[in-house]
Amino acid sequence: MSAALNKVEDLWFPDGNVIIRVGDRVCRVYKGFLASQSSVLADMFSIPQPPHGEDMMHGTDVMDALPVVALPDPQEEVTHWLRAMFLPGDFEAHPTPVGSSQLLAVLRLSHKYDVQYLRRRALVHLAACFPTDVDGVQDISLNWTSQVNNIQLQGAESPVAFDARVYTVANEIGALWLVPFTVYAMHTDTWTSTYAIDDIVNSDCAISLTLVVRLYKIANLVQQHFPVGFVSGFSDSECAHDSLCKDYERRRQCDTIEALQVIPLTYYSRSSEGHHMANDICPACCRIMLEQYSDACMMFWEELPATLELPSWQDLLAIKARDLDAPRA
Ligand SMILES: [Zn+2]
Image (cartoon, rainbow, N blue to C red; front, side, top):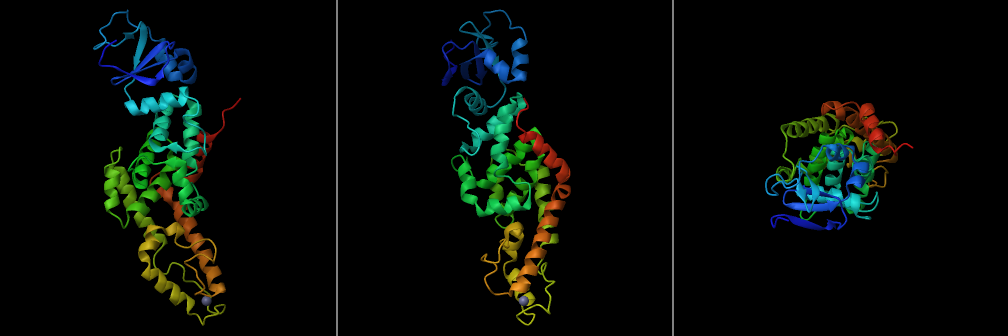
């Protein structure tokens, strides 16, 4: 064996019958098992191997008298993915926590090599944190702690850098139903904190021109649907505060315009007990305001896919249902 190649200890089974090489790392695993999981690897294994004796440093076709299959993917991704298949408990189903890099590696390679059950398992993890409706967005924001606990960010990775990686992988594998929320989340993290854009630029994925344009478009959509005074149709006759509520609310939106345009979908909480509501406008105005707010959220969300030049929600949800569907017997 060449000294330049490093065995991956926990993926080196002494009776394994195929060597997977990625960069300078080698794993000794089971060909028949891999072929049963991955139709793409099954096809690769079926290609006849060259005769024994190829130069390890050049051809790398045989090692320890076993066939060597070189994969072109990043080393870290391949080892995460092989561990998910070969090491029990390494990549459990939701809600067991998973690492962010592990999750995206398993998702990307399971898609590429057609390991459907792991692709689905990874997407179920993401579906729990990347909602496709307004209720889901509001639940996530109420429950932020458990969200980050389910998917453990790696090292110094920021949420916005993770969102950017999810955005990239979702586009790559066609899980487009993840895209609206990733763009919304990146908008909330960058709109008034432009330094956070550096986190996207410096994340593992290359920021694309399309993403920059989408961030611009979603910011425009926010301003269309949530301008100051967007909830102002209060009824004078029902107001218990001599019609002062609408002026009060307009002033508050003006004072907190930054929050309104950064987190439009969670600016008001669902109940009148939320901190934005206090008791400073009367119950009748509060009820009308929450109705108008809910309508604005729904319209914004409904228009979001078209604004981002994505398929309609109906089509996106059909893709999601197919992606998360349990295997058929
Ligand atoms: Zn009132």
